[in-house]
Image 1 (cartoon, rainbow, N blue to C red):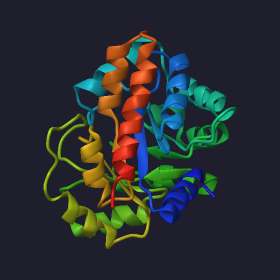
Image 2 (tube, rainbow, N blue to C red):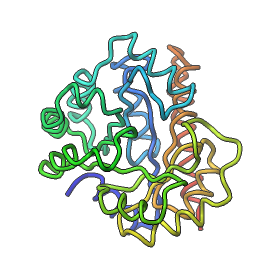
Image 3 (cartoon, rainbow, N blue to C red):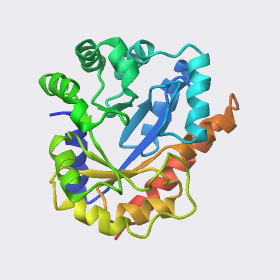
Length: 267
């Protein structure tokens, strides 16, 4: 069974929600990314997304855009990230998902990418700029190898579109909580609960919500209506602000523990 499926099954049986954390691979360096993954997992992250840096990250806000630029300037590539995943797999079985724009995958070669990702130990992939209608080649190659292609559902998606995206999604369905780009928000839309309830009527696949969630209170609020929450920009900013300060890992771990506590406090 894919590590994503087994993780959601385990959490569901325990009555808990998944904490999914996002960081940009290669920021501040690939060597540090391996340490960051370990820190996230040790402090309560159930699934970890590794962002593949790209020059035109149209779905991302300023925080992740800047992280992508720093990673690219450090020479981070998709091939190097797959090598990093291989190294992480020597010591960790935490589910890993790559969030990549389609151009790096297309340039790498779709079938070659899927084979290399599975061999390295990647469990899933999210491609925010790949429309459902254009993703058949990736989904077919991934399905054959057991790599989950996770579909994003927007607040503006029609019911028919939600149903189609849910049918195609593997691992979990990614509900985008806000219209627009990634980044922390002071307030989340009040209609999230209704939207997630509607989405659940289309699928038994776990649903995780992300974009805009940055605090334990927001994680708890959204987690009441989803199987998991995804937190990215606030962690990416903490890493950027910490730089080479050895206390950065302690601050990152504390933030993840606080998010974990927020989710575990749901009743």
